[in-house]
Length: 183
Image (tube, rainbow, N blue to C red; front, side, top):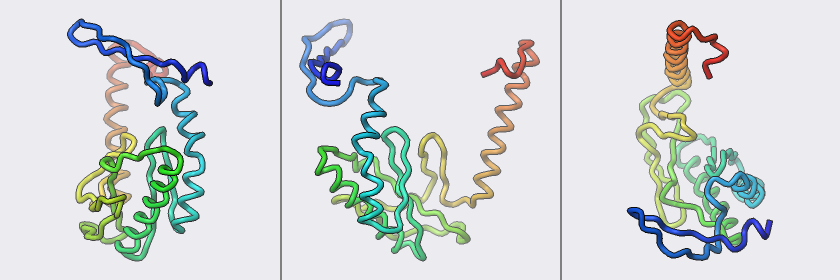
C-alpha cells in the first residue's frame, strides 16, 4: 500500500503545454479501484458512531455519498435528529482528518400523508443552516420529490421503465438482435 500511495506526482497540461510535475502527498489516484475500498475502510465506524451519538438515525451510503435518515413526529424533531447526526459525523471526520463538503449538504422532508406541505425547520450542519428542499433532490441518480407520495414515485419510475422497454423492443426489431444481447 505504501508504494502505491507514495511518490505520486501530477502535471498540468493546458493548450498542449505541459507544466512541471508536482509531488502530491494526499489522496488516492483518480479512478483507482482502491479508492472506494479505502473510503469504506477509513469511515467504517461512522455509522456506529452517528447511531450512538444521535439515536433514531439510520445511514446509507454509496461510494462517497452518505445519506442520513430520521423519522419523527414533526419536522422540528427530524431536523434536530439530522443536526445531531451532522455534528457526530463532522466530529468523527475532524478527529480522523476527513473533511465533509458542507456545501453539498441537502435535506429532504417526506410526509406520510401531508402532500404539498413544506417543512420550515432547518438542519444545522456546522455553521450552516440547511433548509429542506422544496423541490426534487437527486441522490445516486434517482430523483426524490418531497411533494410526491410513494405511489406517485412508483408510477413515474414504472413509466420510465416502460419507455426504456419500448426503445429496446424497437432496437431488437430494427437490428434483428435478441433482447438478451441489448445491454
